[in-house]
Length: 180
Length: 119
Image (cartoon, rainbow over all chains, first blue to last red; front, side, top):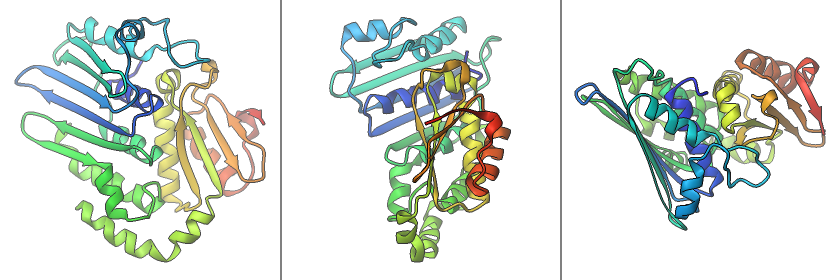
């Protein structure tokens, strides 16, 4: 069981990386007007055929050889459906995968969103070779975080350098305040 | 605070970038499979990043890996140090992760009470 929605997002992003993705886009939108929390993770990984998509939502299926379980996607689907929300997965072999879920904000079983700042930091720093694009919005503001842009600015200094970690931590703290 | 400020950090660090790349002394790998994440691996990874930033550890790199097949020991971390055995820690939380940085990474004394395997 995942503690919060951000844990599901980390899990989906790790799946993307395991599928060979080099670019991962993560969108989180919270709208009080629409009474909806919407998340989407899309990647340019190896993708799946239709039969595999059907199997991947089965809790006892995994394409990762040597792994006994692949519970992440069924857990997310279960959470979305328990809350009366929706779950959708689309994939094209050789092109990538897109997973979307929505949740009614006022549902009592909706887990907390979790710490978005830590989620962005953890994924970006521990996967320096992956280009992440985060798009975070609510009814009044929008924040984007593009690690490709950051790596260009760093021009050779690695994103996991201590001073960069400290900077990005403070930067996210300052710019994501609006989402709480 | 603007992202462009990163250029200043880049300029300040420019003198020792080459040296750092040659001296990546330790790699810490955090298990981030579904069971690891559900058990708290994200908080462990964040604690490691906090310690690296706070202690200015320029020769330590934190990365992640998928399922390790030992779900009952999650969250797990591996410490890879050049010329030494790989030390695998299990059932780690943020506080234990901070202790591992202080004791193992900085003081070179593995925290034996959390070790589940050495290979």
